[in-house]
Amino acid sequence: HAPDGSAIEIAIETSETLATIQIRDHGPGVPETALGAIFDPFFRVGNDRSRADGGVGLGLSIARRAFELHCGQVTARNSQPGLNVIIELPIEARIPA
Image (tube, rainbow, N blue to C red; front, side, top):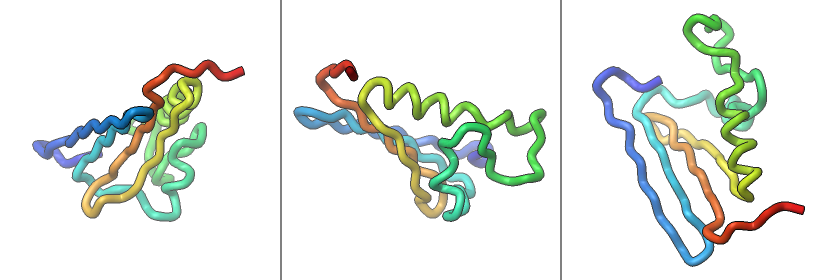
């Protein structure tokens, strides 16, 4: 959703216990009212999008579940312009019970 020719920025930081990956584009971002829902299954920003140009709304929910299964989390916030997605994963592997 970023403009053609624009850059996607990726930053990685680590501490003793956590790896943080930030991915930022320079597109329009997401309406503030939708930020909490973009990782929900079948949620799509914009009612006028069709499957041909916008998918079915499963990609981000699948990604969130994958991070959660690895004891991590993913969040998003607007960066004016653009969207910043923050992924946090533990350095030490923990297997949920």
